Amino acid sequence: MTLSLDGFVCGLRAQQPPYLDDGFFRITSWAVKRAAWRERAGMEGGLVDADDALIADKFARAGAYVMGRRMFDSGEEPWGDEPPFHAPVFVVTNRPRSPLHREGGTTFYFVDSVAVAVEAARKACAERNDHSTSLGVHISGGASIVSQAIAADMVDELHLHIAPVLLGQGTRLFDNLPDKMIELRRLHVIDSPEVTHLAFRLH
Amino acid sequence: MTLSLDGFVCGLRAQQPPYLDDGFFRITSWAVKRAAWRERAGMEGGLVDADDALIADKFARAGAYVMGRRMFDSGEEPWGDEPPFHAPVFVVTNRPRSPLHREGGTTFYFVDSVAVAVEAARKACAERNDHSTSLGVHISGGASIVSQAIAADMVDELHLHIAPVLLGQGTRLFDNLPDKMIELRRLHVIDSPEVTHLAFRLH
Image: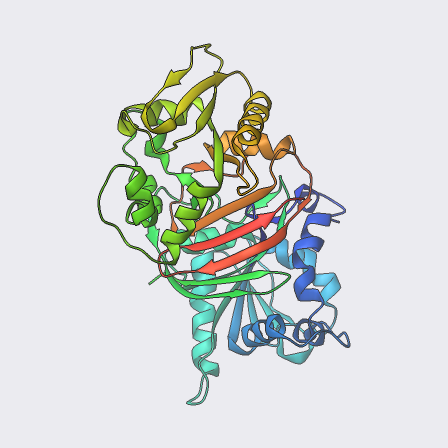
């Protein structure tokens, strides 16, 4: 997840139509400029550097995705016929719906809880893993899904990208977590001009 | 300011008597172990390393301090006869009170707004500065004072120390800021086993 230094994954304007949020565009700009992101989005060009390598690694390691319904709704149209995932995506929603098959290996499955989504994504990874790979479940967001997964003790690693900006108001990544201390083990701190990457292990 | 990865400067138990908050003790433990902190607190020993150097530098650069009334109230007794500041400290409170002189060069002045406190602290720094020093105002906290100072455009640099822990609930450093994007310029990212130091310039 990319967040502002004050902890927001998007600003206030992402919370209501037409969802054009300058805060969200600002904090995610580091990714949109990179080649690995652009390739998955069907766009040409892009920077190839340490930030790009992290994005490429994220895609390479993700055997299945979990996301919330609002993230799916806001992405469905811009992602187009070939969404960037190229893997099963489990969407948490209380509106039952048949699976949605897209080009490039992406299929969206609609399930009714974070726990069901993570479990199904784990199984999908296990089926895709062979001796040479070690695919994992990538929880894409939004913020509420990430917090629910942390609270349910279903998150092994947190990979945060801190954009050097304060948004002031918006949607917090960490909100409504229980009053419980969770110790983290640092995996890496990677500094770059546009963003600071922090990764931690929870277990 | 030291904060948890989820953005809290203390947990829920710091908000009411007896103010013994395991979250606060956890996130500030990196400082309490260091020699520069211990020396100012009248304690012996402590680690001398990169983290310690940052604390020593903070004290060396601070020509005057600004803090909120609750921080003063909770510190007055533990700080004892010789508080760690060795400089003028401007406490924001709506309860007028005469200055409080302590040993070691610390005097607490009580003023009625963040703006007055920062201005008075700036003057105190200017009086203390000579050609060889460049003392600045250190805003010690709490969270509300920092946010008020940012909102009033009175903060030049943000020095954050991120402890690798989630508290879940507590007092957020960044809360009630206006809905306004503030771009930051990165000064440094210093990684250490116990804490990640991030510093930014606001102007």
